[in-house]
Image 1 (spheres, rainbow, N blue to C red):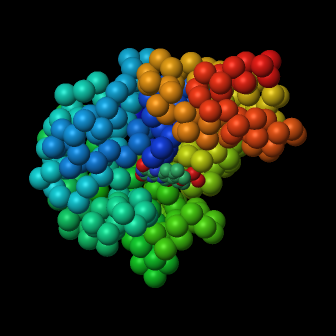
Image 2: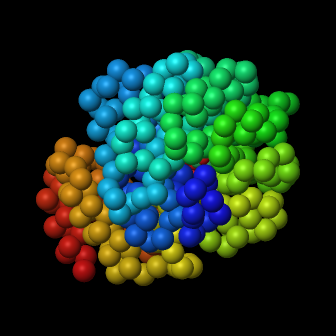
Length: 308
Ligand SMILES: Cc1cc2nc3c(=O)[nH]c(=O)nc-3n(C[C@H](O)[C@H](O)[C@H](O)COP(=O)(O)O)c2cc1C
């Protein structure tokens, strides 16, 4: 599969995950074989006004390329400006968030609210595409509600305005994260566009992803929640990895966090992420308890080391 001139070796992609898909986790998922990874959503306003916290989110490493960075916003001019700034960084794809259902984002008309304003959405895509040489992708939902499933027309519109690929989380805004993703909508979007389509929603293993591609015709799949605490999902099929296998991945994750962040400043986030590595594991609850009882990154690391 190609996005613009970028060739993907693996059709399994890490979804943008605010609070999770930072440089450390993206590097880890790439090491386990992810086709590419998408950054956390980045505020176009924050970027256009060069806010320090936003600029920090642009940190990347040559080994994780190709990398996609995701912008969100509601103003075509600001989105264009943000795309131009982003293009000065080592980035390979610019993704536009038109799928986020979070109140804080949609109340300003960004994220999935843009599916209700396709004219504005088209202007945003066009401005972003005009302000970068990089391929632009758009991440959408099936529609606003089940009465307004407009993903096929919307995706075709996005393509006409310069999108080089579409990602579809096959739920509506009104679904939030509940109910089952509707694979029929993925199949319909595939028929409506000629650029590649990335399917998304509830993929929990490679087999699920293969089935989604086979049944809907989508070209690749994006994995979000199932990758948290399980970056090996992008590699071979590990149905129930052993504790040592999990520990190896977690230790590497902590090493990457230390490499790219001041680890002691992000200890709460580290504990949350570390706990996820033992979900659904016999003795997982007691390991998680021990993780939560640590107070510093150094303690957390020592505790993990003590497990083997
Ligand atoms: C914690 C969390 C953070 C997310 N952050 C973003 C984001 O920044 N941008 C975005 O487009 N989608 C975001 N999403 C949606 C995911 O990218 C994905 O579309 C959704 O989780 C469905 O895929 P999954 O079932 O594989 O998790 C987020 C989802 C979760 C659970």
